[in-house]
Length: 265
Image: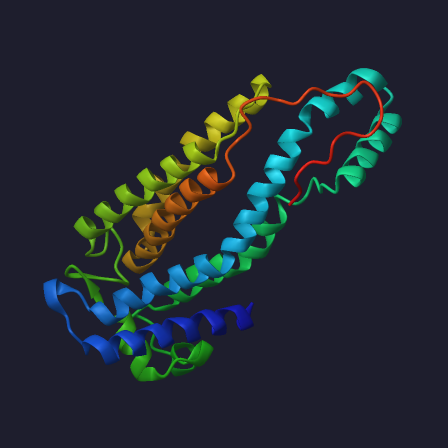
């Protein structure tokens, strides 16, 4: 993961140098704009780079949704014969060139990147005094000092709700929870199964509530990161739904033989 951390740090420092060159080290409204904007544009850079993966994920979900009638037909045809059903489902996926894991791969690939963002921002603590720790991932001692002492609307980006950044942290937590809820509402698909509907409800309400609790202990810089990426994710999800709208009706399953080829991921 050190390669990921170093890459994330390099992006953060690049955007800081770009904004510092454009704005100088301005600190209007109690905000060190070069550092705050470097966090915002770091998140935007990563999200834009991962956009093709999210589009692939949605296309894969739509392809699987399109095959649901045929999957139900196979389940009715083979009953409790698990082996025959598994073979028939695999043949269907192969024939339609659909991968049941296509929607999971983007999540797997993006996880190290977002963990790297989280780790690097949490690393910027002014209480860190060890020179070797302060210069990890390509930072200089001066860069580390400036970043760890930067402010957002008067609150240190290294402070949390309980350590001096209560008002700013509260605003960011509210924005983070709200945008997470809205994004999950947009991402939810129509589920006929009661268990799936229950799971979706738990995720839609449970994840924002968990962020409400955990946000109290997170530094302002990390909350800014989460809020920025959530706002981008909300806009991205709205765009993807417009480009790849959910199916409004299911195509009928043929009695036998190969189905019409579905659009694949």
